[in-house]
Image 1 (cartoon, one colour):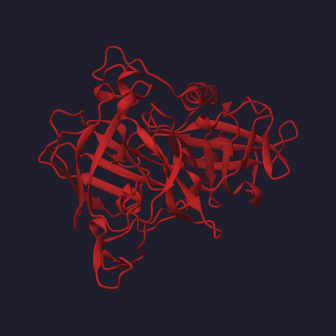
Image 2 (tube, helix red, strand yellow):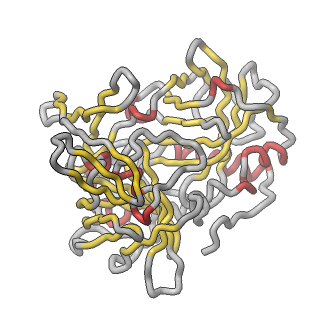
Image 3 (cartoon, one colour):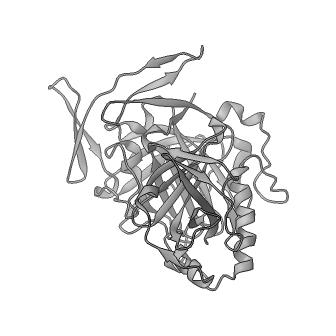
Length: 397
């Protein structure tokens, strides 16, 4: 595998074709039909028992997430307590349990905490999910180089695989604390894997998750105690020792969103679109109003990076990253955001539009520019400010 592999010279008509395809995948993320592939078609009814319950967190007066609020069987909310703060020191985090008589050492895989160069928000720096975040190489005798990137989205944990093919993974803990834990170095996890080799996401093993233990080590991560009666992984179960690699994420095949040759700036230049400095009002996170279960969240950083996140019950997670810029000329009275974000599977950018006008503290979408792909929402749709710390954590029953 070559990190950072890309192709240059995408033409305008190709951009629009990719965007139309991608917009459907982004906004209509439902089932899949990979007939003729090695990955089974998903039966929605079969998958019901394998999907996560949602844990919402209270937000205190400082805007920080506190104790999780859990949906009980009767639909009411109950509060779980939790404590502990951490300080990084030589690859471990010392966590006081609050009693003053006991301390645990939280391991940081590889001895270093990955710092995301894109500037996306992290709310719980010492959590299991954030300690796991980073680039890993699978330790194997096979000549094929295999890599995995782990991503933390408000203590939800996702991964992208590149080696013998490519795909994505959703990891779930089996308790409410789960990946938000600042003390755990090992836990039982279940992994749902899916592929987009044919531009259509689909859970493998018919949505049956792989069950195994995930443990942090001084070198990286080990998966052990794989339940052979559970679902398949994207890589061989016996090759589950991961070595953490120092370097930027976002370059592996299938998810190369950091490749500058696909930047939004260059794509605008190819299409003779003039750009300007990013306005301050767009920087931050926004959620699309509408059906609460399909409210896609965009986060725009001041350095010109963007990520999109959507996780619906019984459907594969939508997690995209890339770059964005802003057009100098207004489109139908709105400021136009040109995005080039990568959907797992193609290893190249997909262009989207987000043309907006300010309406109070909200972004109201207006008809976009057909010369640059497809809008991500309908005319008049409203995006409102949103805190990434409000994204619910998910865990398996």
